[in-house]
Image 1 (cartoon, one colour):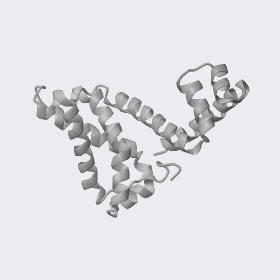
Image 2 (spheres, rainbow, N blue to C red):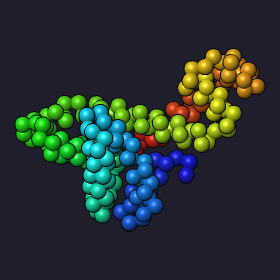
Image 3 (cartoon, rainbow, N blue to C red):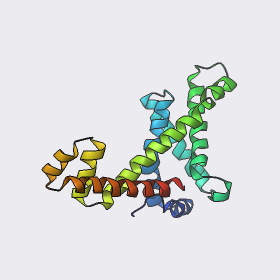
Image 4 (cartoon, one colour):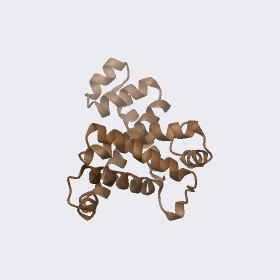
Length: 188
């Protein structure tokens, strides 16, 4: 499966049909994002685990009747709503806000901005993972060392036995590929 998100529509359909492999892949894909969002809202490690479970359980219950319709919005917006509601429930359960309105105000004040930032970071890390799996090992190592680790191109070239120009060309091609993958991932 070259592009994990491009098959997400199929994955969502399979989840509604009760396919366990698709469900496990869905949980594996989205649990890290949900944990990161919980952390950004100040949830404890235990509460983040609870958040993941609550979101997955809520989605699983809804998946029995869920039909993704692009015309009604993106899947990430639907998932964001579930994450927001589950976060709200955990904060409310803590009892450290006066009432539901205060809790909702606390969550809504910047939730969308935080969600969008975390979603973008998540897509970028997924795109890098996908890209790495598609690349030749030497090309990946060149990109990783030069772009991700910020090592000098001459050092990378010398240690990998390639030209400095090859390092630059590889960077350009890889960034183009990364942009393409991110654009595909953003469609969902």
